[in-house]
Amino acid sequence: MRPSTKLSCGVFIALFCAMMLQAQETETTGETEKKKNRFSIMLGGAAGNFANSEAKFNTIYSNRTISRIYMAGIGTNAFYFIGKYREFSALGKSVVANIAVAGKADWKQKFYSAGLRLHADDHPIYAEVLYVFTRAEESITTKDPVVEELTAKEITENKGIGFTVGIALKIAGPIGIFVEGEYSMMLKKGRNQYGRANPELGGICASAGIQFVL
Image (tube, rainbow, N blue to C red; front, side):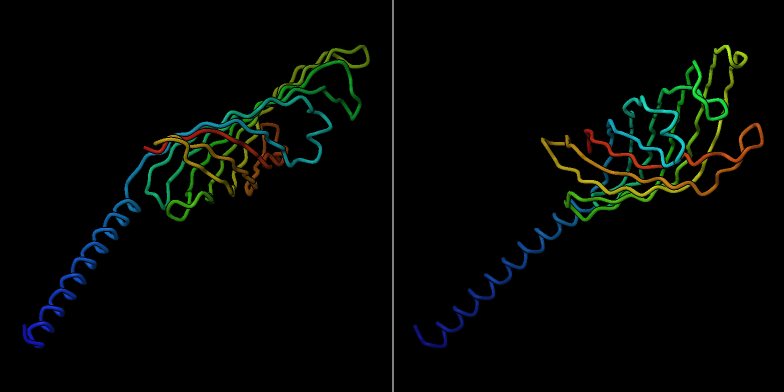
C-alpha cells in the first residue's frame, strides 16, 4: 500500500471516530437537556416547629403542637411554582392586665403561601421566595373570683413574604426526603375587628418531611 493511501485511510478513520464521538456527545447533551427541562409535579408533607416572632407570645403560650405542612408544585428540575399550607396551634394561660388568672388561651394559626422554588439541576440545596398570607384565631376564657367570667375571640390577619432554604435528597425513584427552614416576615399587618393593630404573626419554622416528584 502506498504511503498516500495509508495516509488517506488514517485521515478517514480519524474523521470517522471524531464524527462518532461528536454524535455521542450531542446525544448525551440532548438527553441531559431533556432531563434538565423535564416537566414534573411535586407533592410533599412535613412536620415542623414554628417559633412566633412576637415578643409577648411566649409569655402566654408555651404548650405548642407540631405544625403540619402540605405542599405542591409544578415545574422542571430547575424551578417550581410552589404552594404551601401550614397549620400551627398553641395552648397557654389567659392574662388579664398582665396578671395570670385561672383560665386558658387557645391559638390557632394557618399559613397560605405561594411562590418560586429554585435549585440547580440535581443539586440537593434549594431556595424559595414566597408570598405569605396568615390568619390567626385566639380564644381566651377566664374564670376567677377576682374578675368576671370572660370569653373572648379575636381574628387577626397578616400579609408578607417568606424565605426558605432547604436540602432535598432522593431515596428511591420519585421518593425523597427534605429538611428546610423558613422565615416569614409580615409587611401588612392591618387591624383586627376591634380596631387594634394586629400582632406580628411571622417567625421561623424548621421542618422535615417527605416528597414525591412525578
